Length: 124
Image 1 (cartoon, helix red, strand yellow):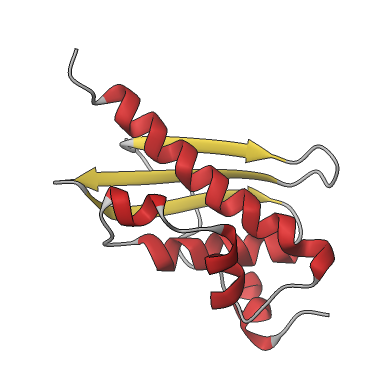
Image 2: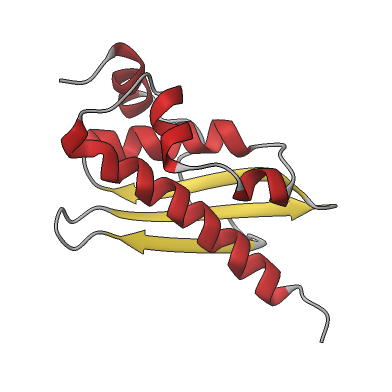
């Protein structure tokens, strides 16, 4: 069902775990499938210096979270905001149609983390 790259990211997730003192946090969930994703970012000088995730969900959800962290680390906020669910799925070598929503969750959680950072760091 899953390709080798998806299985690798599921079995050996990169950047998994909670981050202490993040610059921004984004959390999303899908009530239909029960997947929940939380993305933590550390922003310095307009770049995402570090990113971690906590995901409760299926193999595709965990793999999507893991791949997202690899895609985003070191990118500017603008570059990170341009990352889409299809970018995540493509970098994983594809996901079954029934699991594409998992890559949506990863991109959505990232965008919420960036929005959270921007809301907490905008000039008053």
